[in-house]
Image (cartoon, rainbow, N blue to C red; front, side, top):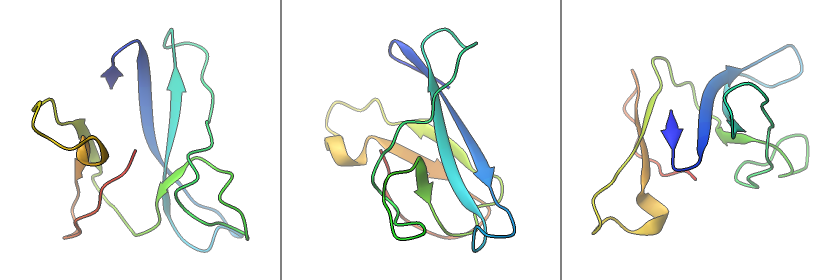
Length: 90
């Protein structure tokens, strides 16, 4: 998704030692080179130094940026999923 001067890529991370499924975010300025910034939102293996933004199962995760100028800054990123959760993320 294009977000200002960067692209954001949301993906599902999982593995044998991950403790389940996690939604993660990577960022890029050019759409070619990507980095995984530390958002500090979710504690994983005792640390918040990671790019995990959501820890619940979120099939069909569809993020979007709320461009309503009245939307509070902490609620400008939203997502629709196949599950019924209400949660904000950065």
